[in-house]
Length: 241
View 1 (cartoon, rainbow, N blue to C red):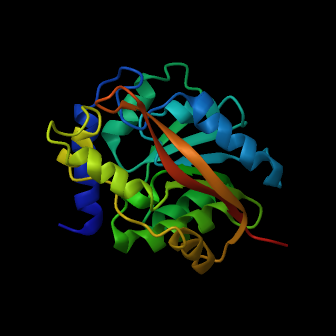
View 2: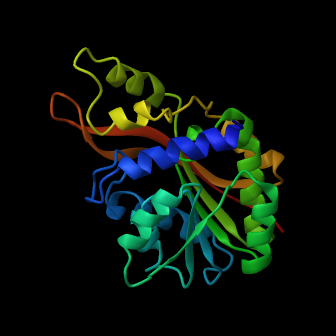
């Protein structure tokens, strides 16, 4: 089984098991503490807000539907058909479009860019969940999609999040209920060095235009009843000139 097919299989299993209930998934926090915050950071760097926006790794589409209220055309893409089924079910009005996409596959990225032309890209927490062999290919896809005019917003868990998640997973009582399926399906967050993310983008031909740190709010709580908030880093990238 290839790296990509293992990844697809894991996500299909996760999303087939996931509930449609809002907030049932560990990272499925409300847009006002996720995408709304991110859009405010992205907007000052947009060269053309009228470009299509691609939500890479859209999952069940919670953030995609919010983004569709802010941009004229939004396309949510995911490697899992089961995730897209959730997204379409939650979006009966069709605020956004949804498309199966292997974001590590060069020809699929090129075909989508041919269809959309340059696009803005939103990606939250996808790179650290990829297989290491796919990470540069994913950055290359972002570069393909943004072309010369688009901008990309990425947010990823920082290195400091890994020991915290590891501690939750090793709790004698077991991991929190919303975290357990992630580990069970073999899609536990991998370690990506903080300086690796901009390096992947630079290798893809993009320039980091802005960056910073943010708390990443989840829908889960510690055994003590505290909301789990993870450290993360964000950046905006695109081509200069």
